[in-house]
Length: 227
Image 1 (cartoon, rainbow, N blue to C red):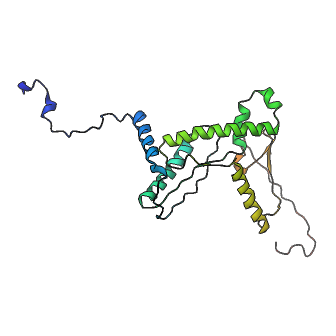
Image 2 (cartoon, helix red, strand yellow; image 1 turned 90 degrees about the horizontal axis):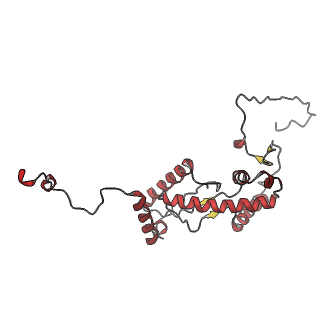
Image 3 (tube, rainbow, N blue to C red; image 1 turned 120 degrees about the vertical axis):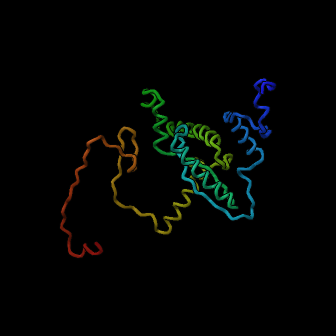
């Protein structure tokens, strides 16, 4: 051992490999993803294979991704890749919800008070559109950085005219079949945001109680049929 001069590694029979000792993920992961994109792996499928279509509920285009949207996308990507390994075509088309209160609130929060006071509905829509498109680009890059495979060059956006036209077409078809009717239900209104709120958007202070009122009415004979 004295003749080796303490160089014990020469006495070990280790495999010779080009793999680095460090993962260096900050550099290697973008290189791997660039290779996937160059070869076309995320969008290349066998056209004769059976299809597995994951209809993905889109995230809001109201800022950067967070833990909730990240977990959502990665879990769905795992499902797609699992079916792809089983021989299915998985043409995943990502999308974004570009309408609604969450985007408008983000826009209003970033404006000075005097600008908000003089903002017209059309100007708010234009600002919300620009904000949503910018958020889509940021989120798109982040999801790709997470390794999610999909047709990122051709996503669907709810603000595109062709998407809105398709929605109107579906609504018209439902109306012609008698599926659309007018009923009576409470509509929750936000005075500060000047918009209607969904049930899930209502927030009450701690300790709040909502009293219920029960009313009794006399119905004329013949009006109770079907009740």
